[in-house]
Image: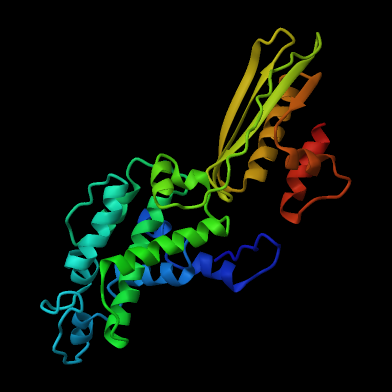
Length: 315
């Protein structure tokens, strides 16, 4: 077993856990639970709901606690997780209220994964308000259910809806919610009177590629990453003073950081030029962090020192 160092160059229990635990592919449904727009308490609660770990009457009976179960919402059926959150009259009214505003068709099912996915349909990979609404609905159904049982408060759809809208208003007032979170649904934000920050105007600027001087070559490099860290790649293209492509390259780098991807792209590009007997080169990249690391008199972070030294030796 090889115990890898942490990114800070030290051994830690976290790094040991990462190599000893059973790695499984992440499920998209759980990724949506940990939104910065949702309190961790809510995320943990929904996680428990998905695993049927919350103490509704049916679960307590499975644990051997005898109850005369009667759902607080209808005072008739047994309280189960699907009945409480999805199928009783009050919950259906809450789901229908928000689904109608977003013009969504929510499937009638006990499968929470399918319901959460239905709210994500036709939205980009960027954070969106529709990702957190199902979480807020289930959380506030639970809060109002407990208030009805232990405090005698009425279990009404309008109380649940009001709590959800109030939460969205607080996000807006705290500037935690952006216009991009309502992409495609700005009219709904206006209908709910959610305060959104004004979109900044960015004036257009002309960007063009400038040819190198006669006899010189220009190397343009870039690193791409789906996250940081995540699966990354690097590539580049070399052109002459006429703008004609002379060489190009691309490489899959596996799991690493975007800074490593940018530095690897520069290293591979410069080395390719030297191996091809191209000595007069301009190196052009949009990675300011990488350029500062290369030009810095310091050795740089410990995990980048070897790569930085290799680049400096080539330049």
